Image (cartoon, rainbow, N blue to C red):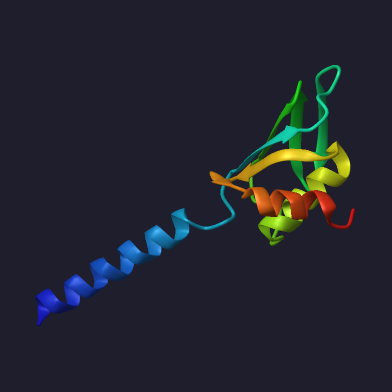
Length: 108
C-alpha cells in the first residue's frame, strides 16, 4: 500500500514539473522573413516582444510569452508593423504557406 501511495506522489510531482516546464509563460522566441528587406538594422517592440531586423530576417525575443494570442494573431501583429512576410515561426513552429498567405491578407 505504501508503495502505491509513494508511486502516486512521485507521478503527481513529475506531471506537475512537466506542466510547469511546458507552460507558455517561459521565454519567447520567434523569427520572420520579410518580403522587403530593411535598409539598415532596426529594433522595435511589438506586443511586448523586442524584434531586431537585419536584411530580410527579424528575430523576436521576450522573457515571457507575449500573451494569449493565437499563432495567426501573432503573425498579423508582426506583419502590421514590419510589412509583408514570407515566413513566420515562433517557439519552433513554422507557419504553413497557406497560413502565411492568410497572415499577409488579414486585417492590420
